[in-house]
Every structure is written in C-alpha cells, then in structure tokens.
Length: 249
Image 1 (cartoon, one colour):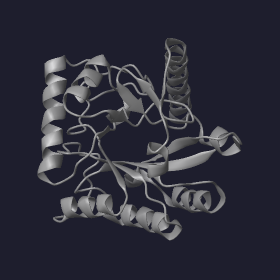
Image 2 (cartoon, rainbow, N blue to C red):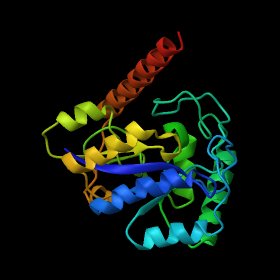
Image 3 (cartoon, rainbow, N blue to C red):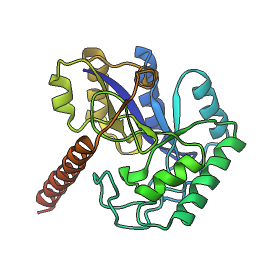
Image 4 (cartoon, helix red, strand yellow):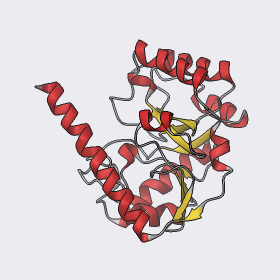
C-alpha cells in the first residue's frame, strides 16, 4: 500500500519551526504533500506564533513547486457538535449549520484564496466533519474534491471525488495490496518521537507525492460502501474517545 501525506492547519501564525522541520524531512525524500490552508483562521489553538508576513507567497510558491493545496474550512472555529456524514469527529465548523450559512462561509474562504492567487478545488473539513449542506455548498462554489473517506483509491459520491485517509496506520503499513491512502499530520502538536517516526516512515514505506493519488481514476461508490464507511468512522471515533477517557483516568 502506498502512502501520501496530508498536513492540516496551515496558517500565517502556525508553529513555523515545526513546519519547517516537517518540510525538511519531506524535501529530503522528494515528497510533495497536500496542505490544508485555513483562509481566515480565528482558532487560537492553531495560531501559536507571530504571523508570517510572506505567508501567501510561500503557499503559492509551494503550490507552484508541486505541493497540493486544499481549503481547510473557513476560520477553523467549531460551531456545533455534529459529526456529519463521515462521523470520525464529534464537532464541526460546518455540519449542522443551515445551507445559506455554509454557502457564505465557503464562498468567503474561496474568495480569500483566489485573492492571494491560490486556485484549488479541494476541500479539507476541520475535524473531518461535513454534512449534505456542506457538499451542496462546495459544489456551488467550485469545490469538487474532498480529502476524507476510507479506502485505498479515490471514489465518487454525491458529485464529489473523495481522496481517502487511513483508518489505521499500523494496518496500512502491513497491507500488501495495491492502492494509496493518506496519513494525516498536524505539525503544530508534533513531538520529537513523531518527527522520528515520520523520518522512519519515509525511509521504510512506499510514500509518494499527493499528486499520485489525485491522478488515479475515481470509481462510483454505492450505498453499501457508504454505509460501511459510516460504521467504520463511527467505530474509530468511539475507540479514540475510549482511549482518551482511560488516559484521563
């Protein structure tokens, strides 16, 4: 199984030291990831350093060099506790809001990207949470690809192309079948062990640039696969929360 890299929470005020370290590891191996750029970040948990004045130029330069770019929500502030149609999280910036509000947020986010010369039709939902109104608003505003779902190849559903993420890194690494899936990283919160694991991953696994996943042909997804994906996402969310509660105790 091949692996591509997705980097969330890219903002002018992210932890630049960690981002640069992550980028350095990727550059060493010639890997170009997908980055999720928050158009107008208001999330103080993500804004952790002084804003970089040349942020938008840097994003444009990365895109021009082959990095894929997604719009990562609008301002990354969670407004509901809705899980949405891919219930891997228990909070959302979008799911549960009325269509007109979601349409407005996606339109404004897209405008900010375009004003800064960033063109993309890829969407990355904060906390992986979106609903049918999100999908409708995305298509209205020119977004036809989304980085979420489970599987080992792109698939089509509701008029969008979904690029899957890994349900379990351990299972992905032991899977010898053909296919590609995504490992998700949040550089702001990575520690020394996680950076070492990333370097080891690129040395030992079949890690490729994100463009290879996007170049694969997407197949139509039926209702049975949608139901299975929903159950798997819900199960993963339950397991993660059980582990968190045990750690707290």
